[in-house]
Amino acid sequence: MFRLALLRLAIVAALSFSLCTLILPAAVQASQCFAYVEDTPGFVPVSLSTARTAPSVEITYVNHSTFRLRTPAGVVIATDYAGYAGPGPVPTLVTMNHAHETHYTDFLDPAIEHVLRGWNPAGGPAEHKLTVDDVLIRNVPTSIRSWTGGTEAFGNSIFIFEVADLCIGHLGHLHHKPTPEQLAKIGRLDVVFAPVDGTYTLDLPQMIEVLQDLRTSLVIPMHYFGGESLRIFLAGMIEDFAIAVEGDETTEVSLETLPDRPTVLVLGRL
View 1 (tube, one colour):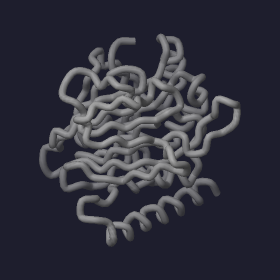
View 2 (tube, rainbow, N blue to C red; view 1 turned 90 degrees about the vertical axis):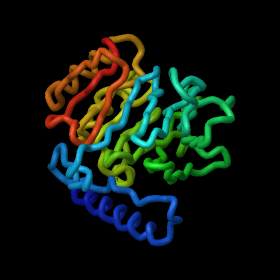
View 3 (cartoon, rainbow, N blue to C red; view 1 turned 135 degrees about the vertical axis):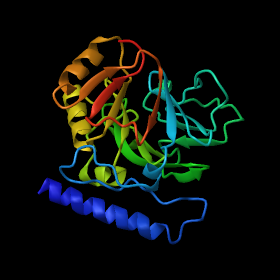
């Protein structure tokens, strides 16, 4: 019943986004990531890019929850930006979440053209969907635990970057398993940046379940403190995912280079 409900929600979400393209400004492209297919691990839809050498996205793990993405058109994105985005030009766009001060900053370089906060300072959910050159950025709000022990609705966002025929997701400071509705809005994810500390964010058994539900091709862990939580996470993923260690903080990903078997890729040394 859960899978049937999830499939229906995915179809509704896809239809909703298709209808939205009829009224959205030309600067906003339609989402290509609503392809949540039951029991089809590693599914990727047919794309015109497969007829030629697929463009790639450069991904660098900066620190904590910050990744630096460089698109084929040269757009630079920093995720969970807290003031540092690694060496190189100032990012074109940054995303932020506010569970802790290590995930956002109020002191922004004026050269940053787009700042996407994962929460809405005015209340209610943050809503983002914009295209910057060759990348579409959108978000799916989730809730977080408050400092008083309650729940802060819409305090976090899962950001999705659609570029080079890839769907790349950053789970942010995820505190709960996404609902079927949220999974439908997320859609297909080829690459996922996942927090694996197991304490401040979602506990590791539930985080592993989330990544199994998403059936992504490539999981890149983040937000771990020392090696112990990372090792526990890898041990929990080893049955369903291959494990790879890059040794470097930077990798390039394209539709053609996605692994045949779902894989956890650790950027940098263990």
